[in-house]
Length: 530
Ligand SMILES: Nc1nc2c(ncn2[C@@H]2O[C@H](COP(=O)(O)OP(=O)(O)OP(=O)(O)O)[C@@H](O)[C@H]2O)c(=O)[nH]1
Ligand SMILES: [Mg+2]
Image (cartoon, rainbow, N blue to C red; front, side):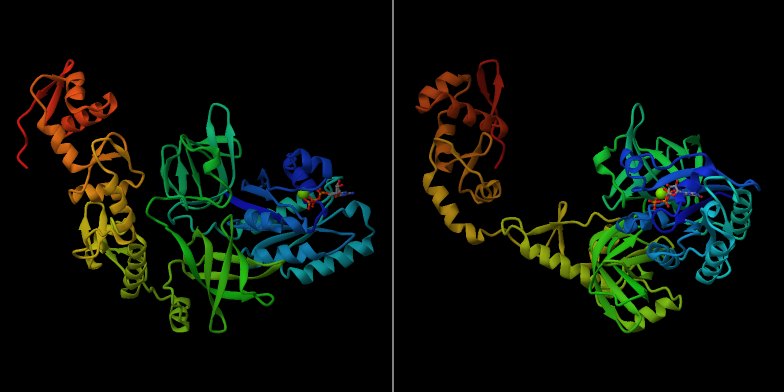
């Protein structure tokens, strides 16, 4: 079974060197990384272990300014390899990376003491003792990325830890958090990420969230090799025809359609490392969004996000301010606005509490509270709508058909209105009067299209051309001089207007079914009953 593994550890402690020694691949591919001798972005390499286990390695940067990148690389992995320079011992990002991985719930781990080639035995034993204390129960292996010493033992240790467990969530609907997107010639846009759950194969229809766009997978690769179908627990690259490079970025997610929805609120049970401030960065999947923390009781919080994420119950989040301050486990990815300790406690005990619509045996179910929230939102949107068209679009969600009849709103076409709501001029009464005063036979430009439509419905003007209007009286006058077989020139002269005006009027008559154009002439048609 394939698994993913992230590296972890302080800057310069030898992560990238060790990954290269293990896999033969130098993951520092950016020119700036080579020039500065540090990792900046995530690196990827496949690692085949002696027992046949395939590991996808995600090499993370150690620099303190890139911890957010490290978090994006570490989400969804099955195990980690903590790299500690035997000479220096644990340093700040050794501790911070370890904390992040614990908050993410990654429990399987191995420690590598690197640069063993340049330390004496005593220093090495000190480093070993420190590591054993820091990561109790983990195998600690002294290695050298330079001489290759200890690598076989390290491979064995990785294999034994990998063997101990399966990738979780293999059977859940597909979720792939994008950590890289790029364009390949002849292939188009490609997104890569760690496949959290489900599988992804050629021809699959997926949804790109939080943009809400349907996409089709043209091809799938695992570490540069084409595969028909990739399983959870692997690094995966998918080609997405028709998607522009700029429409994709780290933090986006590809999901099985209908299985997950974006959310601006998450109810979580907190794991605090330090005081969690009122505003934090929430790291979830490969996304990093600002959020307000609304505390609920001692242990819970509602995270109000500045941008939506796609989460599921049980997911982990990492909370960061200047450094990592804590994390949380998602209790409800679509919670009510008013969070309560009682509700959170029930959820924590594993109860299922429906809030936002969910499908149960084919039917949609939702809470009364959720419906009220939706009503309030729609009420607000209607209040803010143009008084000339005081409606709101019907929600585009899958549940709309089931929910709309419960809203007490009136459906007209693709919009919802308050029962009996009529268009009103509101503050535009003066503008309407001023416009009416200008109208005659010469078309007047009207920029406010909604106003023109409204006044026309009221019989106060007639629209002609593209965004022009004349008075109803002028329309009638022009209509009265129509005779069968009239040409544009004759009509223009009889009316005493310019060619352009005459043209606009005749086109309107055509549109109204009064005339039909035959060659240069207009043939009269029987007037439609009014
Ligand atoms: N002697 C010796 N030097 C090593 C060993 N491993 C790494 N180095 C050196 O240590 C320096 C840093 O190594 P990297 O592998 O880039 O460290 P890193 O942890 O990936 O650094 P960041 O990604 O920037 O956090 C380089 O100059 C390496 O050549 C080792 O086992 N022995
Ligand atoms: Mg590195």
